[in-house]
Image 1 (cartoon, one colour):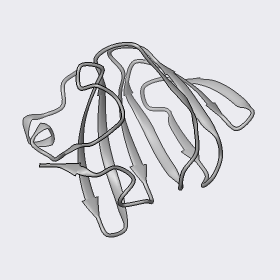
Image 2 (image 1 turned 180 degrees about the vertical axis):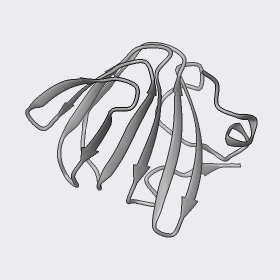
Image 3 (image 1 turned 135 degrees about the vertical axis):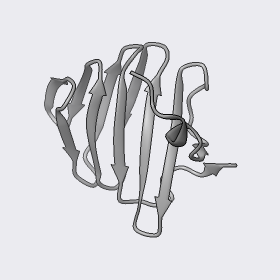
Image 4 (image 1 turned 120 degrees about the horizontal axis):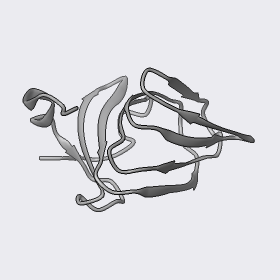
Length: 111
């Protein structure tokens, strides 16, 4: 599955991961940030926390630890991460997700 060209034309983000590991395209409003993530290589997202986040898996499977619960999410599954809850993930290459962050400035936009 590929994201359509109009989604690929959305702004990139300044995220702390190399472009050859994950590509992202975002839409921002003053009320939140919607990010389309495309994982090109396996990666482990270290434990961290921030404001509320909601997401859905479009392709592949993600192993999330949210608080004290670890679960594998596949296509069509959604996850809800409350503000301040520590979470981490193991994300294989080929995974595609859409994440929505309440924090509009969670990541800076790239031109």
